[in-house]
Image (tube, rainbow, N blue to C red; front, side, top):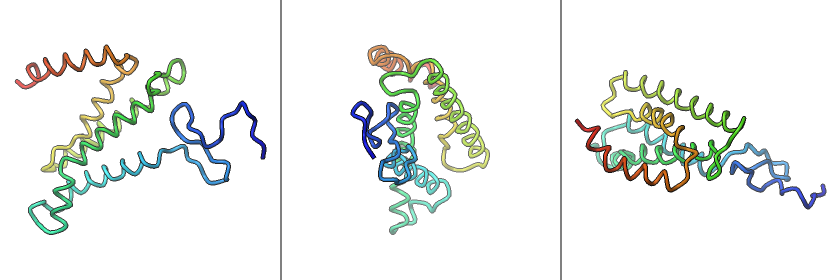
Length: 169
């Protein structure tokens, strides 16, 4: 198999940051394995928090449950933001058809998260479900993802100053 000098190697990152199928014939699924592993850890931790034993149980199980408390949802939030950044084009937002497809992917994920979060809330779980909030945040990011760093920093600073005062009453 020859490689044309003007074409990228098959195992190089694509513009979306995903890996294509390597030339070795190994199956390439266009996934970031580390991201998938971290996402699985976050989902497993959130599942454990909702249905697992209480951290006060003690021992190894109690320690693991204490470890999952709060950290799983924080990891899930960071990974959710990372996924939105990947979907929408990283530093160079997608435009045209690719941009519309990216927005559709974000909206679909938001609807799924809203539905799952609402269903989980309706079960009466003693843990506050965050999935519906993530779905809402996915929708709220859509008007912002094409902004550069400076306007985003100004919006974040303004929200940090004003948000706690207008939304806590």
